[in-house]
Length: 504
Image 1 (cartoon, one colour):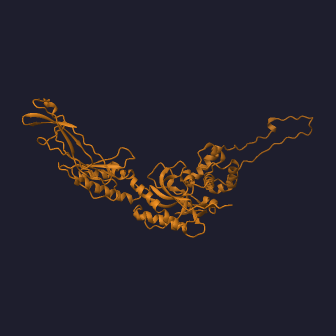
Image 2: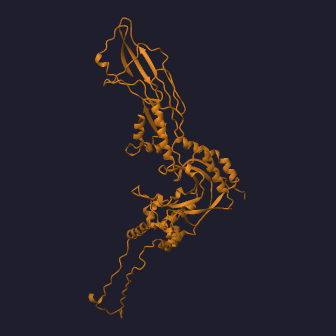
């Protein structure tokens, strides 16, 4: 709200003018005009419009003169406020009243003229892409602002997904938007933007499989029953009894020694010494002197803490730690990786999965499907320098129905434009990941992930039969976000055929 004094016909009149900026692009002209920009491929809710709504009210009475302090005439301020709108909506608002008196010039406290119009647009690109524009040391932001003469306003929170572009003309704002588009295109197709979602086939719904995965981790890490009591937050499903735990530890005791290949196998053991004194006659007594009793040196018994530290040290030498194991409650098969950087793309992906459900059922021939997990394999590198270890997948019946269903899902997402270019046409290899060096927690994020020595693990579990399990459904899962059951957050899901109950 601002006020200005106009001299007209010898009388002093006050005009109260309030400017309402209904969208983020305002025209310099007083006429009611609208400007539309060419739609952008990746931008959602990016709209241009112009318009100025000005309500004027003249407060003057006949024969009455209103005096103003001349010093207050220059103390006029104006606030520009950008208001975003819904997608693909252009709003223009103008007053139908005829202008009264000459044109109004608004001045600020410093005497400079304030432009009556401003151009701005809110561009929603997704929170995961904002930092590519903002960059370190201003980065792309500085270049865009310098070349186009606009000002970029970034969201105050990490969850914010819109950037506001403010400029003096529609042309400068449009040019800045196009430059942001180029940065987004480059980021999306690079490795710098990580995958945010994926289509998964959950396996963590099987308690028996979870128990095997927990035992797999505990055996390799050398976790004992005492350690479990100290760490109640174990990933176990909680259905394994103490007796079963002891039996499992007994079965894996010898195998665990194979992993610790760096152990001191040739270390000397301290001899055990026993002294037995016998009296010839129970009724007789015999004197002993200190010098008559031999001194015996016993090997100190290692504490549990010492043993744990030794195992931890050996595992560190092998490059093995808890962080590289897949959490049992997130165990799954991956069908397709996706980069969905804003809400609209997530919504579209959910709709694609729901709509393709009938075709998936046809590919599965409306019959239940089960898989077997058996043995171990690695993605790249040798066993001594492994990066990913997984359990191979075998379809029961070997009819190829599962692969056909996965191809139907993948084709639907490609057709919807939700798969990045470099992933289109890649051959699917279903696998259940058990260990991944990329998940390793490290202080220095810039360092390349380290491999690990998996030779002992393959000796133990190379021919392991993990069991046969049915596939119940497919999920659109969000990475790094988890539901109450511990599995990845489900954005959408479709069912697979289930076995019908038969009458006795």
